[in-house]
Image 1 (tube, rainbow, N blue to C red):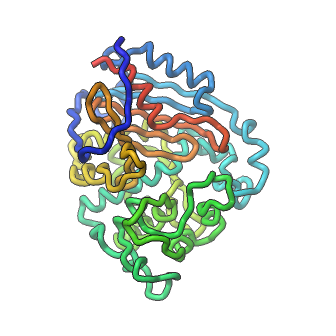
Image 2: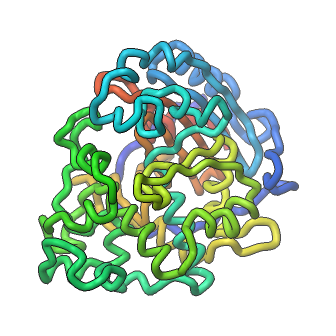
Image 3: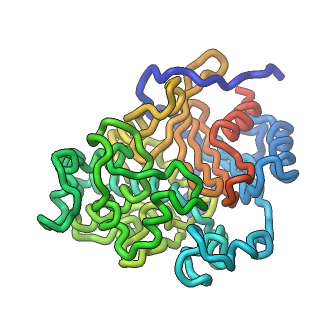
Length: 395
């Protein structure tokens, strides 16, 4: 088989969803399964990928799911005794062990992480942000959410937010969606590092207030600065603006239509944890990626407008100097060259190894889950997952 290379390239155009849906049945209650050759994939390449995962090349990977043209072509699950693996960490208070040792914010407690109470629902961590973007998009599509250029301070009582200056007054909903809010926040450190801003957030009772009260570091829109708290503010705005709980809205307009089972954690103040609290199965996460590939259509319903799919998965801001990486509305965009053509991968990315990926030009959905939570552990990157699966493409 001809060797093909994945090479980073400069962003040259906006992504538009143009995949032709080629399947006989919607996966609302369950996916159709097939074999790799029947959808143009080399089984030997995928089996070799599976072998490398099983041998520990990418650390603790919990699942690998490859869907092409709406059918499951390859699916593997890998079992680990996380209660034993992280036994010492689970009993030691620290940045990732917050509150009661048996609670949901002990990230080493095997009752809560990575699976929800021994079910097949896996923590999505920051992929929750991407799903929150979809929920916001549904509300926008239905005319039930404010204009994205509405100032954030409009949703807080006057005088209730600290460190207000002209820059914070200019911060809008769109800035929250694109990680360009401008707040002073450092989440580039390991999550085990107490200096990580996210660690301070976890210690607060009101996570929205903690985030909103931060001083500004830059003007909104000036720079990409990853900030988990920004998505919590987005959740607060959703509730205020719509008069509906974001989780309840997601159940009615996303999870039920797609047949998704879920669990969603709450913050200490009771707000749905829009930054990392969602649990779904690998197969159900794939449904959300598939929804993007169809331009927001599911069976006979337009769940999400085509405009939102296009806008939310377009590169709003570059995050790498060479232009190979960009960020949209809570989606990571990885640009590359494959077989001489410019391509894009649309992905969520969650702590521990959560990687739902859409390759629209190839009709591919890839979902990887894992639980590599310590700084020295290997993990499977979005780019590596894309490269390994693309090697199997034969048409």
